[in-house]
Image 1 (cartoon, rainbow, N blue to C red):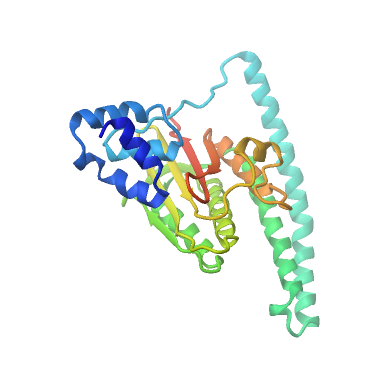
Image 2: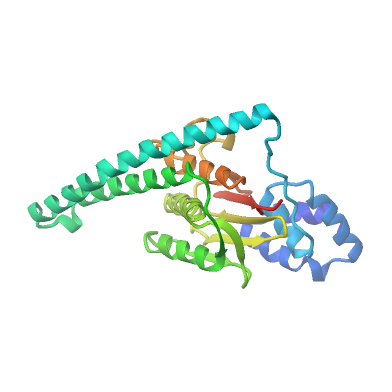
Amino acid sequence: MSAENIIASLRSLPPDEQLDKIKHLSTTESVETKKKILAIAETINPPWFKNALLQALKEEAYQVDPKVLTSNDSEDAYNVREIRSAAVAESVGHIIHELQPIIGSLELAATKELPDYKSSNTRNEVERLQDLLDLFAAWRKAEQKPNYKLLDLNKVINEEVDRANAKNNGVDFDVSLPPDLSFELDNSLIRTVISNGLRNAVESSNQVVGRDVAPILIRSDCTDRNFWLSIIDNGVGLSSPESILVKNRFTTKPGNSGFGLAIVDKSVESMQGTWMLQNSATNGAVFYIEIPRRDN
């Protein structure tokens, strides 16, 4: 089978079968075929599919260089953005400062006045307010300069999966990570990005009616140039193309504010990375991020 036909056949499979087949390419195909697959892989999308092919064939993953500001005009524009970000972060800090005690007082009053508070709609609404406050805190962090540290990403990713698993109403996760996965990132920003990606995948999976839902696939790795992570769900997919969703206040679901994906966008941008959200080949959607190494 030609390299083109091999890639075409892989594209027709569900994501979990794709990943399984890709793993065996290095042992099932000839050297010449693998070279042709590598040549084609450099030019194809989606990025997670490309990186999986390159990784399986022991090749360095391709990374598009982030946009670098070089001119004096661009530098001035960058300084303006820094000033604006600082102002936004300060304003959001005031919002958090004012709302946090109000939410705490509301919860305390409701606990005393409602005997069945734990099972009440009031508790659900208080928790929604707290979730919104957490999003404000994440937005404030995304407006500030990243604080890079060498992270154990196996630990970070699995902790965020455990948090999502505790709230998910029965959706399973399939996590496959290299044993030694470390990279310099901002701990708070990358956790915000991962938790939002997982939450969207869980919500999409929980909306499925009339068929079984496959586990949410989490894959990640590092190259000498970048860290990448993909979250692939088997849910209902996106209601509109990615370009429309981004323009429409970053929302993937009717009635949502889109605040979560807006924070993802700001957080990834803060670390000079790129992200993508699009429908997968079958059911569900693919969420993908790439963050370059700081010395690239």
